[in-house]
Amino acid sequence: MNRRWALISGAKGTRKSETATRLAELLGARGLTVGGVIQQSTHESDDRVLYRARRLGEPPLVIPLARRGSPPEGARPEAACTFCSFVFDRDAFTEAGGWIREAAAHADVVVIDEVSKLEVSRGGHHDAIAAALGERALVVLVVRADQLFAVVERFELEDAVATLELGDDADVEGFADVVAAAARDEARPS
Image (tube, rainbow, N blue to C red; front, side, top):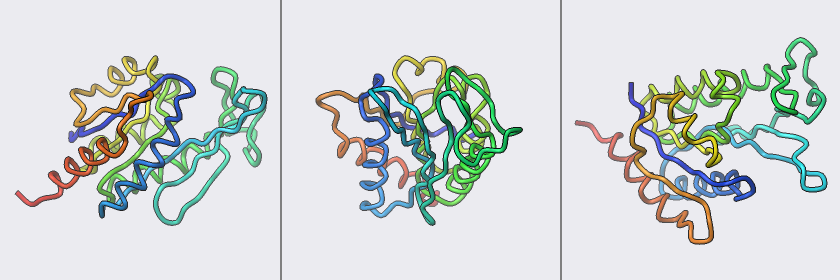
């Protein structure tokens, strides 16, 4: 298995998804193909109430993924599953998992936001992440800091090729340089 990976990590509210989006833009500007999924959240009174999955790559797509307390719009009742206080749409995870698998087979870098308790419990994007880690693409996992140990253990990850801990001095440009170099190194013929 390949298991080449990089990490964006930070506490709740440190703009991990925005940073992952910026990373994808920076890598694209460096000539790399980037795919994967960003989980966008909607807030009401400082509480997250809705998640949407946004596809990185072509064509760009956005689908409802989860809603606090009730299924997201368009979810089939038999596809709904509750985890913590959110009701997730299994069909949306299947679709987003397809985006991840496709990117892992064809892109230089795959960004997967936000890997958490759901994936540690073998739900959500778990199977797509496991598949992506076995492909040649470099996988960037976006993980909340308090979930990092469990994610590393679940996916049997070893040293990351690059890490970015979010905070006031986070160097996204420098991180993009290291990720780009690592992705290009693997792409060179041996």
